[in-house]
Length: 200
Image (cartoon, rainbow, N blue to C red; front, side, top):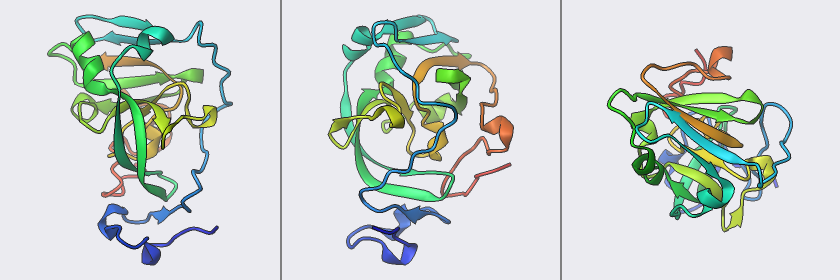
């Protein structure tokens, strides 16, 4: 099946949900894009470290992480390479559950996501602390595939999808921003699909 174009939005879908310059993928397509190889994760040694400007830093093993509350949300996603998917359902731990656990300090302004193979990306804490942000484990009723970030990826639907970092292993709370992997290589740190802030 080919790609939808802006003039072929599925019936009943508000065209305003598709940002400028984006094209819908076919319903059965979710393009694969990432830096480096797909990791081979051992859940016995996997952990998520939360540190920096927090009152209660924590390192969670996989079983501890799975004890956190979860929810499902509908969300659209938009890749900087100009494809979008609308209305998928995403499952994971709401970011507020983690924020309540670690208690960011008054100095915390930004959060850096640390992932396998040294990949990083950052967002303002004000962006991260939102009802549609998940520590994501599932997509459309199934676990994420390894290629799409299993066992854990960040989901920040309001930003271009590179901010929804795959293979998440840490969240560093910071008083000042640092540029992440793609931001150091020309991608715009704001990453707003509706403003088309794709590149510096």
